[in-house]
Length: 225
Length: 125
Image (cartoon, rainbow over all chains, first blue to last red):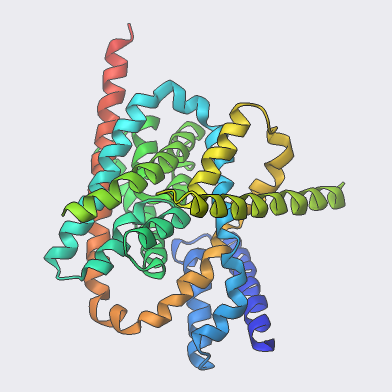
């Protein structure tokens, strides 16, 4: 019991410290997204703590995933004007990207001999984490693998995205926004905001549309392939 | 003022927790093919659009939840310790799949978006 409370407090403390660290030294490998789980994994390994002990306490935080996901409705509401202006273009672009995500993931997983549950866990990883996790458990994946895969996707896209934008001369806010929002959820949105507000808004909308398209497409594509 | 804002945030977060529990229960009860959280998003969005709920009433709570969202995923991420052998044996393959697939997604959506932009520009006089 005490150990569980300790790990809850510990998780929050490491998170707050890594956020402060990132504010001071803004390097991509210092993002709390990487640092917090890494520090906790090392701590658990060194102290030989069984995961259930950790989960009993820190798992309370997982209960806030649902409420935070629903808070995305506010994001949707705030950007709905942007959506109405470009609805067709955004939806079509996102559909292409989101379906490509599921198709290429399942195809490549086959090619590399990964098992079906792993492929199903990786398939929804372009959607925002909470939604990706619930899609994953819907189609027979493992939500934890999905959570990690989604995180890895976010980190990769923060590095790769700007390179793709440059190499393929993606210039408009619409194109950049859908590129980041469709490929890499909230990490992509924060990267898109570095270009300008319009790009950020499109990315936020693209992220939400991606969640819905993935929700509809993933079960269908994974069972069909 | 600060205490007031803190208080409002706590109440609003409590509202989101209740909404989430309610949406989950309803989705399960009606056997909906979508997760409860998606139902919650749709319902809340509709209520905002219909002006049943004002943005002011829930903005602080939503801001806090979205800003700290990362914290809520940490326990799930740490759960990777349960899959040590998977990471050791297939981690590289998984990373390559994610890398290639993410690149494909960026090209598909980005080039499609670029095409639409070009089309919009040529349609405007």
